[in-house]
Length: 208
Ligand SMILES: [Ca+2]
Image (cartoon, rainbow, N blue to C red; front, side):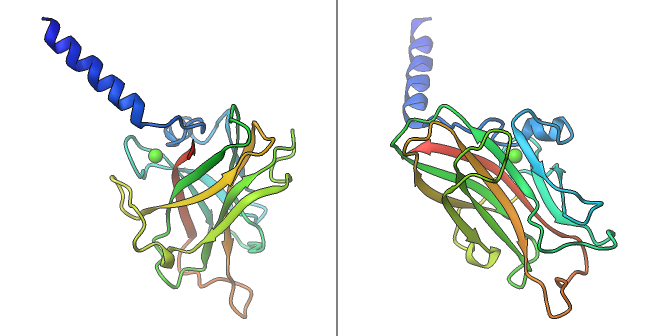
């Protein structure tokens, strides 16, 4: 009877040793999905009826249980303002200061190499009560055409991993942000046969 217990303990120890702490809360958007997009931690930046884009939940997932965020401009909206950048942010707390960290997420854009969508993602300083206004610590832009060789999601392989390194400096908290930018043609609109949508999932901030 003792032997199986020892094996279990060894497995737990080895698992803890190799999985770094992820500081993002609800990182797989499982709660975001089951609560219909209401969240104590995730903030949606959107105003679909006002033409500023729509942020909601999707059953699609990169890994494990259902849940990702869908960011889109809906074709059914009469006037969309394509200079708007709808998206999702979270203030992440408890970080070690002056530490090299890695931020990553999984990005899905099914529209292919000619997609009008680009994801602008990064980390910024926190301004209490004023999301998306803090100084940017590190950011990047990515297009689906650049992600052919990126690691893919297990459940839906349209999700590709994107990463970004940063140093926390004097910040014990940072705001992670993920926003869709849309490229428009000469008529001021993207090529829009359907909704212009992307999905994001599986967020992680870990020490390097
Ligand atoms: Ca998920």
